[in-house]
Amino acid sequence: MPETPAPTADRAPRADARRNRERLLAVARVVVAEQGTDASLRDIARRAEVGLGTLYRHFPTREALLESLLRDRFDTLAARAETLASDAPPYEALTTWLREFVEGARAYRGLAASMMATVNDETSPLSASCHTMRAAVGRLLERAQAAGRVRADIDRTDLFALANALSWITDQAPSLEERRDHLFALVLDGLAPR
Image 1 (tube, helix red, strand yellow):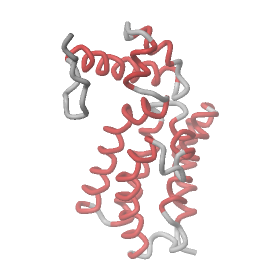
Image 2 (cartoon, rainbow, N blue to C red):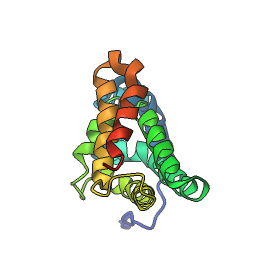
Image 3 (tube, rainbow, N blue to C red):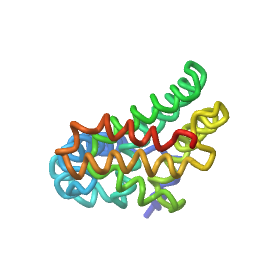
């Protein structure tokens, strides 16, 4: 009996596997937007009309699914930081980027907590997809510091912690949503040199 060749890393996924993955990601975007980052993986598989095993073949962990969902967003935010760095004054570039980051985090409940959980975990798939974005905003921060507009003792981890805290608090207490702009202004005040 002839031996079936084993799949290789170089071989492209079958068309049905690609369709399943794309359908899972499309459904996951909707379900995670509805239920947050703790959305039921079983619900995602059911709505995508695939088995739970199919979901786990494509995304072995919740973090792997979130990383795939968020990679485009993080790439967009990294590119936006680069554009702002070349088109806007340093402080304006930083504050514009931070505002867009906080606004975008509202798309998925629980995203702020998921991101903060991976800040120091370099093995996390979510951390890997955040790396380029964090580096890009780090450059915006350095420019604003060099211009004397942001305290020198702030680093990019501090910046992400503050931005995520603002996203998290309005996520946890929707009644504070109307105060988000005020809270954002308070964060910016805290960045100002003493």
